[in-house]
Image: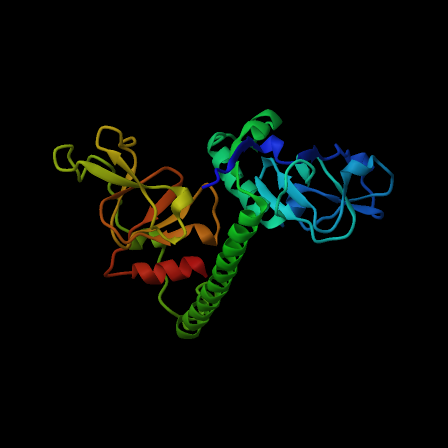
Length: 300
């Protein structure tokens, strides 16, 4: 069996960093300046540049772009001829025989691994030296195409599944509003109460579990909140976090205070997990408020 070539990312292709545009360079006409926030849809504002700069900074439809600072990611440009801003690489396939689709998956996987090396940084940033040196396995071109075809099919299935789940979520929200009305305007005149009066106190580590009664605990972190907490990390009792952490029970609702949005609200389904820092825990008084009802209210 032929072995795959082991090389650094920098030896797979040439990566051109974007031009350091200044706000004074911006215009309302000309070619678009591609910024990270435009690729991630974090901003709808588009800036333009009317002048001319070296050809290497020009991006054409189909070019592969890599964000290596702030928000890490790989993208295929689908717009008109544009200019590349700094903190983005443009890939030029001039070193190895590469299938573009396979290469996109390779970079995406590599960025996830590189991201763990800058975890905790206020602004994620991968140096060019570390990027170039990151080791990857490069199969022959025919195998690249086969692998890419399989991954493309899997991604298409995932996208269809996600779209179906999104439709179910929309249907659930619609049914909720039909049955109970808008929680804010309260058109049905339901009795009102502050959330505080409907919640129980959430226990901290050490108040319910003793070191003699438990050997391992699951840690639920902010990054694992995706509607239902499924992924956790196991720690031995001597390694677990501070005693300020919450002990989660089945039915507890958690939502992120670090990155608050609808994707970071979830219901826990397992007793005994320990909540990491970065989110609030709501445990309802079931005689006053259903935890599932509260979950839907928060989502709405």
